[in-house]
Length: 457
Image (cartoon, rainbow, N blue to C red; front, side, top):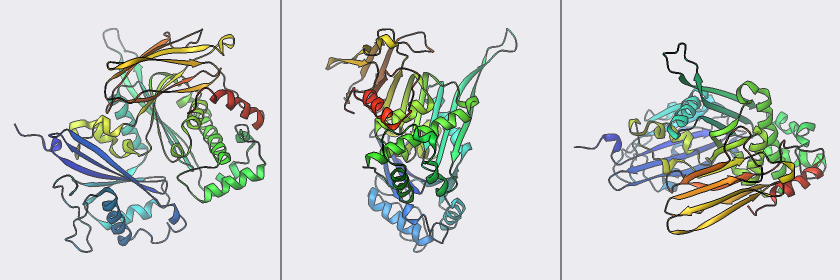
């Protein structure tokens, strides 16, 4: 019996143009040799941001971009026989040719129309899509079903655009006794958009955001650092003050979206729930800063799986992963597209037990010694899960009166599988609820020292 065409050796290139970056992901699979992977690259367009309304995206620009991408990936993408005409080199074997090229242009990308029209004029070989709410609805609903969650919250965190998408299963009551309840997936989106940089820069002077700072410095110093950061996009931050400003800004933005959309985000109780993070901000903050911002911004409690997709694989190949062998261009596998997972445990802690052990667990593997894990109250702890070739079982339970506020059980057990569903960290947030910031940066500094002193992550 011959193999289905979609399951034969193939490669496919998808580009995502978003927040002044071109994110490229090239997927390759060959089931006959059990090999598959996704190559990733990002190109910063921010040096051009003051010229994007000019004629920047010419045919020459795109030819130069694809020529550069071929060198980065060491992969022949363009058929060079047609001088001055962009033709895709049809797939022959690994490293030579692709089955197709798709470009997704985010609807928030500055000068969206200029970019979209330039691509349409550049080549008829390229499929062009718009990354809008409809696209995100398809991805969120599909991942909810594909990964088996009941609630999925996707935070897309860029400096100028904060979006929270949510897909969750809701059981509708049966009309009569003879009918079964109907499960429906509800999708919502909630956003904050900054239309210009002046408003974004001035926002840092707000008294609301100052309540989240932990660096005690002058308002002018904070404004100067923030304005410089906004004016010059960067892929890495070394300045501790800027880290603090961005963490406070991110926390405040997420919290504001939740408070303004209580009908959509007012009941986030973690059980069989997932959180996906994309955008530029997760790349800039440390793991612990990002956790503080997301947990406190969404006011989370319960149990969550958290995915940080810094390479935008889910945005570019999420539909392929969802559709499996029914995908029209290439099959993408779980181990290639899913980032490592963080398991979040966020219980309620009683005041009398805030300094005691609140979680005790074990890591079990067939060819490894059993490893014990502990977490204490009053702090957020990051417990690393070993990266090994075999399956790992993580078992544990809450201790000394710690409970999940909306769950009836206190024990957990989950499986970590390399190249499938692999967990990187177990996060135990043992801080007492509710989380209170302020009234001063000095007070917050003391709190963060207590909240983050339990480990060295």
